[in-house]
Length: 416
Length: 158
Image 1: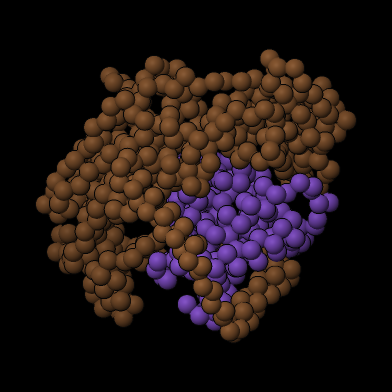
Image 2: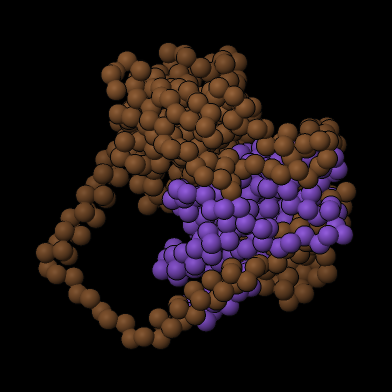
């Protein structure tokens, strides 16, 4: 059995160069803070321009919310796709509970081209907290936590959570229960048959009105039932959850799920079957939306080059969202990393870390999403940048070796 | 936050920061560039840290992004360097472990490192890597499965 200590030992301690770089950076910051700061004044003209920009941003948010535009601040591809991300129909999920009041989940925008699906949605991120002391029967349902866990937040902490942390650190008994209503991170597609869509990437942010906005991308291959349809009906479950923390002055006890949950059998992410109380969130509503398929253009590209002296032929299929590249060599140009690792039946052979860079004509690199190499074939999937490029350049490399000359890929139906 | 407090918090994270860099960048020079860039970015963006008790995951997220920027800028591979810490010759098991982790896809390696070695919850890892919790769970499952296959041993047991 490999243990956590083995992994810590395997990674080793920071090397001298790393320590020196970190120390230098921290020293520089401390030295800079000691220098007197120079204040700059905004010119009248620049100040007026800043006010105008802020006003425009506020107006845009108030009139029509397009989350692709908001997430597009960090991802140019989404900004390009924003005009094509309108829904055909949409119906938010709205519920009201005793503990959390009224809240809603809404699918706001979606882009679907038959192969790729990107969905943006919001929830009210409702969470309420109460102090809690379990009865002996309730405590018997809770699980004793072996580690030294504490509530964690990336944002401000609720006063009840903070009171719990303060009490725990002081060795005093305290407990709280959190009630929350939120959008599921698993989306479903289809009218009669629910097809579970597992996200391959996602982002989130907080809007000015306090709602949380999420972007979910399904580019790791939509299931067959969700591909190439004229329109897609999306269903986003709205979930309710309770979480209890109790510190008795010495030990910590946790419970996820309602106190009256039933015992059941379930399959966990390790693929094994387990028995326990149903601690999962409860579905209490659903947001529904329909997105029509955008007739996205697909363009094919091809090019020839060499890698380690071996001729390679490259073909790419490009949409504004996704780039799929197939590389075929006239020989064994890409030894399988795992095969090399196990060469001669001895574990510990050299492993190979390949690197592939794909750039458009402006020199902008497209982010790699998936990569597989074996023998005389390699396949690469990248995120698009919202446009069809005039041409692409592919560079291939492996750790410790020279990279290939860039291989130019041009549209197949256009002359080079 | 004063520079002294900032430096103290970063210093407390030093081993973790090294492991995060090591999981994404194999070249020593790249790791040195990444940690310096992360320190300067974090210092400049202190206003984006709304709760100082979240300093650790906030800083790690900045470091992960700095490592990725270096990966994108990388154009010429440096000659193969010796492993940063030569493995003890009487412990081939640790070398096999290191090789197996390095053989994983980077996203799987990062998820396993942050969750099982550094101890962050799935929710925290999702926030640091800008992924949904389901995506993190998928990568954890696939990474553990691949490690088990490579090492022929159960992984991440107590």
